[in-house]
Length: 66
Image (cartoon, rainbow, N blue to C red):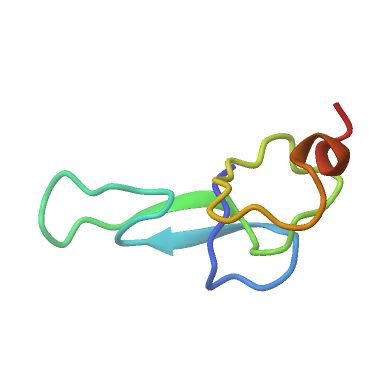
């Protein structure tokens, strides 16, 4: 389920959405009830898409454990 920054915690909720993330309306004014996740990363999160913008002190392999 997509994560939304305006829903607090790591729970799943069914909310009425009118725009992204999680719903892209095809008609103006369209709203739809969708299941989304909160803004906290928990053990139930399977995939996190991230982008490294600045290298820190530790190498990336050490942080990711590969």
